[in-house]
Length: 302
Image 1 (cartoon, one colour):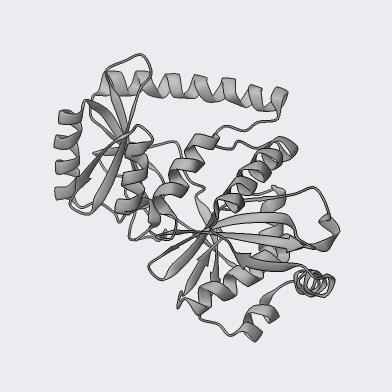
Image 2 (cartoon, rainbow, N blue to C red):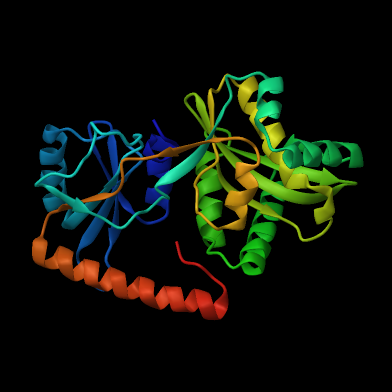
C-alpha cells in the first residue's frame, strides 16, 4: 500500500480542508469545485477497485455530491490489468505514469556497481569534502526545508505547494511516515529531503537544495545515504517518485541505476455526465492558463 492511501494521509487531507471517505480500504479525497456545491474525488495509488468497489464508490459519490472520481492505482502496467471498461474513461494524470525504483534487497556493492561512474564519483567526492547526511526532525530543520523548497522552486521554475500545506503534512506525518534528512557542510545545510517510509518501501516525494556549494554534490550523497537508511529499515524498494523525460532531475536520478516501472494509468469514474464533461473542459482551460503562467513566471502548477 502507498502512503497516500494511509489513514495518516487521510487525516492530513482533512486538516487541509478536504472531505474524505473510505470504501473498504480505498481512501477517496474530495475537493470542492470552486464556486459550486459539487465535489470531485481522487482515489490515488490504491489497488485496482473491484466491480463491487466501483458500485460502492458510485453510491458514495452520489451521497457526497461528487460528479466524478479520478482513479490512479499503484499497480504496474501489463496486458492483463487494463482498467478501461464501460464504466471508466481515460483521465488526466495526477502522478507521473512512470517512476524509478531502486532495489534495496541488493548489497551495497551491487547498488554501487549498477550506478553510472559519475554517480559513484560524486558520492565519494561529497564524502571526501566533508558533507554529512543525518536525519533531523527538528522544527529548525523543517523551517530550513521550507526555505530551500521556496528557493529551489523559484530557481528551477517548478510548482511547489505553499507553506501551510507542508506544515500540515509534516505535523501529521512526522515520525509516523515522514522523515526529514539534511545534508550539511561545515555546519551549513545544503539540502533537505523528506522521505516517506510505508510498508516495505521508502519514497522520495519532496526535496530541495541550496545554490551554495553545488560543487560538493550533496544531493548525490543524500540519495545514497537515504537508500542505505531504507536498507537498514528492512525496506525492499526505494521509489524515487516520478520520471519526466527531459527534466534535469530525471537525468540525475537515472545515474543511480534504478529500474523504470510504469503504472496502469489514470481513469475517471463518471457520476454526473453533464457536470463531469463541463468540469473536464474547465480543467483543460485551467491547465492552458497555468501553462502560460509557467512560461511567464517560471512556476509549474501541480
